Each structure stands twice: as structure tokens, then as C-alpha cells.
Amino acid sequence: MIRIIDYGLGNIQAFLNVYKRLGIPAERATDPAALEGARHVILPGVGAFDRAMSLFDASGFRAPVERLIAETEVRVLGICVGMQMLSEGSDEGELPGLGWVPGRVRHIDSLEKAKGLPMPHMGWNDVEARAGATLFDGLDDLRFYFLHSYYFECRNEANSLATAEYGDRFSCAVSNGHVYGVQFHPEKSHHWGQALLRNFALT
Image 1 (cartoon, rainbow, N blue to C red):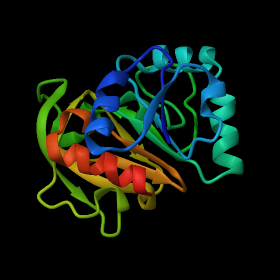
Image 2: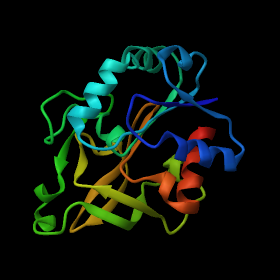
Image 3: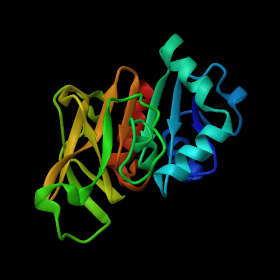
């Protein structure tokens, strides 16, 4: 069973709708007890980094998810700001991130070739996945929908699963052990997004 964490941010219903179409059981988790027995957990997020971190910390979900990561083989997928929360911190805010994937979130215009481009980076963009990245199994000509002004700068290149280009190339999917993150919105990315969410459920 997939649990989608509802801590006050993110379109939970959109993910539930995708999994219903795929015939894969998924439920909204509104309290930490709902994570009991979960093998796959989705951490959505929209808006500002500090607000997302504050709401997540206040929700009571953080410690149970960290325990699941440390003690079990539960898979976690952070999406959009949910991916940025996996970092050690963000240039957008002052609060520390979860630190589950080594790296820091930077503003896109910190990339030399992205300076002066319209912000946010919004719309469809091609994605180049690293060979062997299971989230993208069976997918060709990758295209996903983006809406963001910040990107994840991995401390270690091995943690980058995929890149996209907006003036310059940046990591748009990351992983560390059983923790994954994608900057784009799979729930808005038609068959590419559905396939990625199916792949996550099968990992």
C-alpha cells in the first residue's frame, strides 16, 4: 500500500486519482499512525521551503518516516518542494532540511547560463535519466511538467538520477538509498508521470 502524506501541502487527490487509474492501492495519510505497514511513502509539497518544513515538522510525521527509512526498506518519494525538503537546506529559507539526500537547494539563476531567464521555470521540459535509474524504467523521450525557481544541487554526483536544462543543466531527480525525489510534477505529466509513479510503486 502506498501512503501519501497529507501535512497540509500538495494536491493529494491528484496522486490518488493516478493510482486509481493504474489499479494500485494508495491512501491519504492524515496522521503518523496511518504509516504503519507502509512500503511506499510519497511526500508532496508546493510553495515556500520554510513553510513546508514548518508544517511537516509540526505534523508529527517526521520522526516516524525517519524511523521507517532507518529500520525498514520503505521507499520515499519527494515531489517538487517535497524533493527540496530532502536536502540539507535551501537558499530560499533559513530552516534546515531533512538531510536525507546530501546537497542544498539553490536558485536557478545561480546557474550562470540561466541568469536573466523568466522565473519560475514553468512548462514541459525534456529530461535525461541516468542509465539504470529504475524510476524511469521503460520510458523513452522523457518529458515532464515543471514549475519551480529552485533546484537541488547534489553534493555527490552519484545522487543525481536525471537532469533537465533551463539555460544550464540541473538535477531534476535524486536518490539516496531508498529515498527518491523529483522536481517535476508526475501527477501533471500524462503518461510519463503515470509510468514513473507506477515504477515507484514497483520498486
